[in-house]
Length: 480
Image (cartoon, rainbow, N blue to C red; front, side):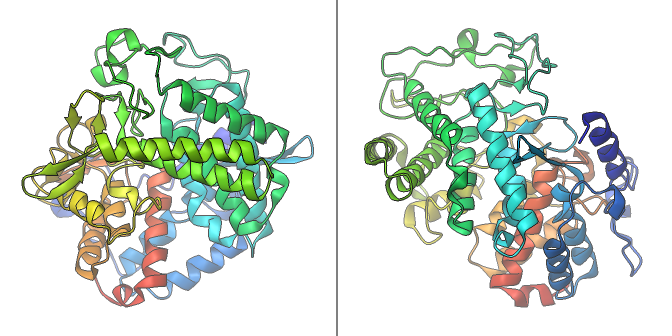
């Protein structure tokens, strides 16, 4: 699809999202009639259409008693397909570019997360299978372009709008913030696409080259010799936009963990060993090992990946777990290897809250449960309680804004009906009448929010509703 036409099409698709003025007061929100006309773009303006997705929307929606919640699900679940997909065949191969929403660039992390709720449909819907296959191919191109970059343009010759960053991004790169999770999400997508579809064709020479480059980059960022070729400086006064010390980050003591200069929120880390991202890397390396051992018959590289994962796991156990006076043993969010630890969490995924969602822990694991209790307490500086809601915040959006994504992940990782109901109620009363999720909203006034078009949060909300439908359908017979 021509890029100009794609952006115009998405601008039209977005028009249905902005329904109410930002000046609306909290007391005026949620005064709806019994009918809830869809906020989805007209069918002819959608960027991708899947019959199986439409069937699932109808099935789930018909089982939700609360009309407003059903309306939110209908708007949110297909939002990635409706507004962000650029799918085509390039050189005889599927290629899928997924913008994050209101930014005309594709994040490796967001793109995987945005299509994730459609993955279960792969075996019954060839169009969805081709879509995911195409994203695997596109992500490989991106990794080979620059393994340190987090976001890319469809046109790999396009000049970055962040060209003033140092070093300036090469053509095709939107932003070059080094985040471990970006590369983990590339592995997560390919691994799970194969596990569901059985399609080995994605494991071609370029994919193999990209995977070796990912592992090489992880190895480099262990910084065992105290050095790294990476640095990042962004001009301005926002201190979370660049690592300290000329973009190289605070000192670390090599302990086997991987340095991440940025968090999944795209904020600079304080201590470079970001624990949830290292745990994610542990999971991802073991997934790579499985593929190389059982599918590609490369035992040597499989063993390398497994031993690397084991090294990370042992370092996490030794350096990232501490005894809390109130909660017992819990994870730190960031460490430096010298004994310094930061205790908090960020609403983005990977987070400490999301570890059971990512498959790194079972919900009943004592260490995870203890950490989760800490995260939902006043001891966590980024767990906010306001007049309308409580939830995970992030330095990215300041000291007073809660992320719907954090509330969604709390519900996704909960085993308690009452907690899930509490989360769904908060999500219902904080969408500011839009029927969509936002990046963040003010804890006392949901009409004060960031980003009206944030496809990851929308689709994640849809994923939550489907999870509740599949596992706890009785909850959807309630009014919230």
